[in-house]
Image 1 (spheres, one colour):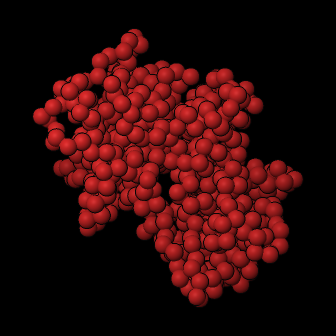
Image 2 (image 1 turned 180 degrees about the vertical axis):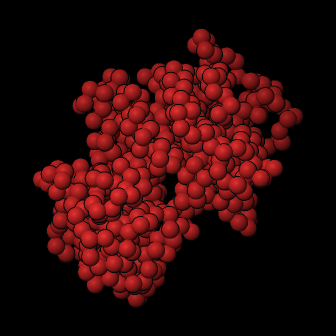
Length: 568
């Protein structure tokens, strides 16, 4: 494996493109390098050595002292958006401090740096814009993308999250304002799985927007014209993929928040050529499959009947990239339990904006056709629940309040422990709330959501809703790909990630009604997923790195742990 930054001490030198070590910057330049800056955390010796005396207050503070100050000021902010801005400002000044703060307070701060607050941040990105992060490549740069990539100062980039901003969470086309998503996702790669921040790069492909509000907004940061479409768009993506993998040969590219029209196509086009995956399709699928496995374990732990995944009937609300991605992975898991693919698909039903997905419909997109069953048309979701009688409903529609009281009560009528996953993000787009799911089922629902809901006190009991957030999956998958150097990302890796995540749910979690581990354990969970993914890479002959004797120890050694190691 090429040199990577596994601690702050490793970040105290830069390497030029000939591999030669360059000097640590001095004075103001050092204070303005967020990877190296420590502010008042520079020791007396470091201040002397790097020309910082007089540029900082005299007292040296520890990293924990600085974290306490960040939290004190953060908790005074009246809105989550202001907290988001405060944290991003911290990252722009001192990434070690930013990540130490996030890692030590993950349950409090993940909803700020990512969903649901990141959705609001993207909607207002041009108005809260402070400092550019990552690369912005516009449709005007066609023919010159390699030149733009050459402007990035670091050669050893291992993980890129890229979006064109057309389908940001459940919020639609946010154009270049969607850059908040790659920035937030990469923060989670580091916080949740220890991918060193120096080897990550967020990229916005600014091909325009159809959002009239942004087109007319003088503070919008992107190109205010209609989106690039058709052959020109395809050529732009081809140029980008060729250029980015030439510039960074070992990079993993995660596609994020592309519209359905492009998401499936780009994944199929590039997955055998490059090291890529689509988190909306594959990451969402894995975290949902893990939740289903854990839900079945929970039922057994409570004394209920033992059931396999292949005994379940799933009804999806929403037939886009997330829903079909989940179903595809569920089908793969059911096949391992003995069903044929055709039999397994009969266990997965979809409702889209035009009703139940059935064979007699003539308006179905290609990705829906495998799940179009022989059945009379059904117009709405409640009627579909009554017809299909699912054991689980999975909301990936981006349409809030669509799991109505009647829907939830029907689920309880047909199931002792109905599985209700309202996965649309952010919280405002969830198909129902945790409180609604528990209330309308008499506390019998096994509930999970994409964004966090608070615990619910009901019937003299506290219910702890699960958060089926992709952050349980993609950081660990990425870590496994990086440490193994896998040439491709396979569906088997995501199924292994799902099974590993489900196995990480402890008996204590189960006793508290949780079907996902507590967030405070996410780094150990990510390490376990990374190990499972890396093992597949070596087993399938995809790895380009030699297998270490102690893989688990190797992964732990690789993981970035923010600290102020001596610089001299």
